[in-house]
Structure formats: structure tokens, C-alpha cells
Image 1 (cartoon, helix red, strand yellow):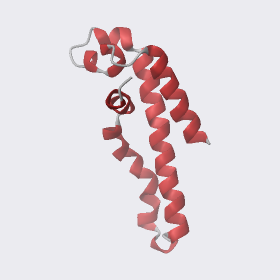
Image 2 (cartoon, rainbow, N blue to C red):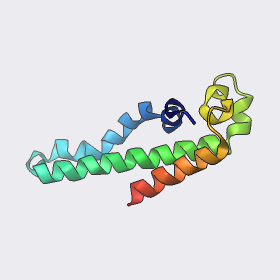
Image 3 (cartoon, rainbow, N blue to C red):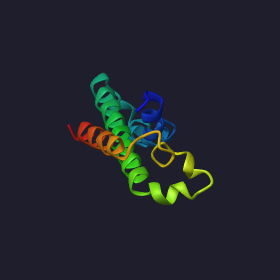
Length: 100
């Protein structure tokens, strides 16, 4: 599996949605200490890893249907760039990493 295929499978362009975890700091400026910023940053990273785990698992489970779709057929698992076992391994690594 190429690194670029693994990154595409993780869908980093979707990670911006995970910044919602940092939203409460905008409403409580007094809580924006260095320690809290680090914790919120780690929370955002965990959300990114967990969402990537779900994206990889989704691509694995939907690969047969995705192969018949005009756009989704270009996804890494559906196109054959990433083997099913590699998608499962990446999903497990991201998921367990997020929970660690």
C-alpha cells in the first residue's frame, strides 16, 4: 500500500469538522490555558484518528457497492489501491490509537 493511498483512505480533508471539539474554548476564554489547549489539541487528534478508522472501515464494508458508483469507484479500497486487509489494519491502528 502506498502512503498516498493510506492518506486518501483516512480522508484528512474531513478532519476540519473535528475542530468542533475546540469550540467550547471560544466561549470560555478564561479556560484557554496552555494545559487546556494541549488537552483540546489531543482531543482533536483523537477525533481525527477515530474518524479515519470509521472511514477506512466504511470503505472496506462498502467496496463492492462503491465499485459500481461513478465517483466512489475511485476510493482506495474500491479501486484496488488498498487491499481489504490493509484497510482493516489501518482502521484498527487508527481506532486503537484514538482510544489509547
